[in-house]
Length: 133
Image (cartoon, rainbow, N blue to C red; front, side, top):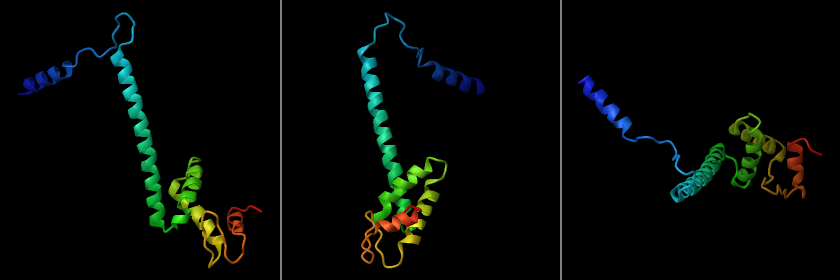
């Protein structure tokens, strides 16, 4: 029984034959160019889907953390930039949202423009949150 299994495995692995490139006249086949174009198109699709997946994961994280939708895009951008330095996206997003919330004050609506109905200049909230003057 063992010999039969070994024989069938050898047959299966040898079915493909030689997979080395054609050493013929050095010309590129039309099929090779088409395959390369298909591969490139598929690589672009994979990259786009990977980016979309990351964006959706980050949006889901923000939703679960209770980050307002108005801030989600800004938090994702800032946290993604900070995450490149070795900090996790989640940790960076929590920190950034915490800073904005801490300096936002009660009753203020924090949004992309950070407009405050009380102060008139909502940009102060972001400046204070990140230690800017």
